[in-house]
Amino acid sequence: MRRLTLVVAAGFALVATSLAVGALERDRSMSAVTATFTATTVGTRATTSCTNSDGTFQITRGTYTGAATGDPALSGPIRLTVRAAINTTKRLGTIDGSVVVERAGRDTRARLTGVYQDGNVSGLLYGLTPMLGQRLLGTFTASYSSDGGFGAGGIGVGDVNPAALSFNEGTCNPAKPAAGQMKLIGGTVQALGNGSITVGLTAGGWFSCSLDDRARGEVARQHIEVGDHVSAFCTFRSGAWTVLHVEKLSPAKPGAGQKKK
Image (cartoon, rainbow, N blue to C red; front, side, top):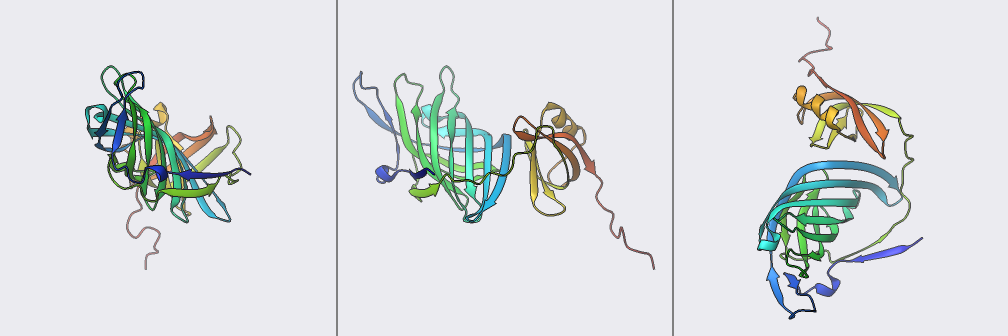
């Protein structure tokens, strides 16, 4: 089994700002750049969970969008596409993926490697800015949840804490459902985005299913919102659970089920 050690900013402990570094073929130059951002709009999102001797793990692959403000190279609509592997028992994990700041003509694109601890992410960004040959290296901080995305984010600001996390890429894979398998779920909507719905199950726990265009139409037509009671059929296809049909249920009337005296 391969043992991996992720070290975030161990060699950059004294670096509190991002550095845009010029290409070596030109005059060497450096300048400090910073930005703040939020990315709380949830796009596509798929979540699985499993349990082993170390605790319960939640693996989320999702896309989150929002806006960034700061240095011109880091200002504009921002999109984060990440894989979050979090031990929910220990509230520790890793977050890896891509960060794109959309700009006219040429986007700023960077890779993110971060450590998750108790609702917060800290790590490093490395990539390219709109200036041809201009590289980007800097700190990344934000709050994070799979349902709510990234809040109070900063690029080139904040402390990287924790700076390192040791972990094993061992086995914790639940049996994959067969393609076409269906599941009936019922409960209260806990989270609802353009790409997925998460239902707090009546029997306990929660379950997430992706939404395609047809399912999004059902959600909009019934005005389904967070807190509503729903029943849904989901099918496993293309590696994820996807809603086949969802129905909004009427809330139980007060006193329903009680016998008259």
